Length: 97
Length: 388
Image (cartoon, rainbow over all chains, first blue to last red; front, side, top):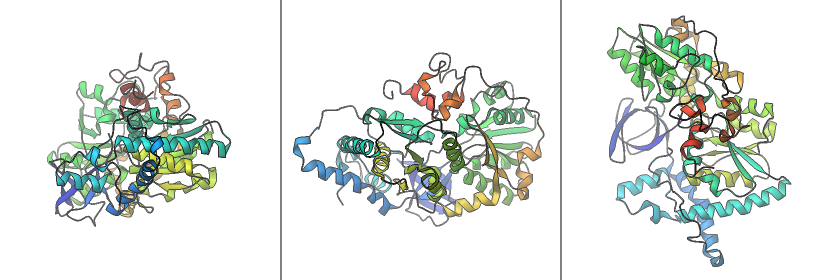
């Protein structure tokens, strides 16, 4: 229900934006994000963009992962690569199912 | 900045794809996820000792999180002593039978075209469902957006187009915007049956019941895009329960859990910072408040929660289906043996319901939680073997 998909704005005509993702084009209203510009990534929910994605904040989410990567790098004894398989990983193609 | 695992899962696609992924969601390798799960395990055990408890129970209150947790098999990665449960986060699931009956009764009016989101159509009401009403001749149409319903009203002026609106703060602003668009376009044949609900008071009601010992909440990412984080502060302040606003990738949920176990004092933190600002989407809040006002709402499993619904303000009465049409929906009847209410309060594991997977399946559902793909029962059923 609260599914929202990130898409890039390629054109704006009044309150209607043209958006692109994965080679597809879609239209959505930007009535809820009036400051959105061409080139911005927005989260689209039920035909409306609801948030402009903050690329700097997106980088912040790497901080924790980076911290863990560093911790793992100097702790060779805990190299458990391959011990547990079968983990499916989101490829970022959409924000949720 | 270091981007652990950037290469493995982004797979070296074309430049546009990489930049899109980088902008919207970090690519995370399976190794990075395992490191995250390992770290979570270490810190969860520290948290168990620090708190002097035998279990850490975190509740998600967003159907999309229910789906993500089941789809990624995250329960399998959790450390011992940590439990994830689902709460009242699926809008279709929490819609009361009496409201579904109202939608069915409206759909049966010969002049009405009832439009709504797909999930609602199959949910059993007392004596029928929107799907059954459609099979019997009612004009019921599934739309992707409330805007689509406005377009139908514009294209078919002889029809009375009713949009049956469900959803939380994520969806309500989109319906408000569509209603305002219909007004601006002078469409007199469009109206809304508002069954919208707001999340914070449901969390309060849940904690007041005190049936489940909840250590913290995985808070809904896309509801919070609109509301911001301030509306949850009372959880920490008044109930001593922390929360983390989380995104919907596997690493988002694991990071949110890590932020939660790290809390030495209950607090509300934002894991999903790339989309959620502390103040929320102020434009969306303003549109929602312009069109809707708080009202009492009936939640499946929780009953009537004062002030937790959204009704259409008097100034927009012409767009309110409840004022435009009078229908007799009859007395609501609950399906025998269905325990969706307990599932929605997090006190019953879906698989522990006697109907689960036997008399109640996604193909032939008895309860709402088995209908919506993001219902706790449907998610568990679909990903059985991965998510158990």
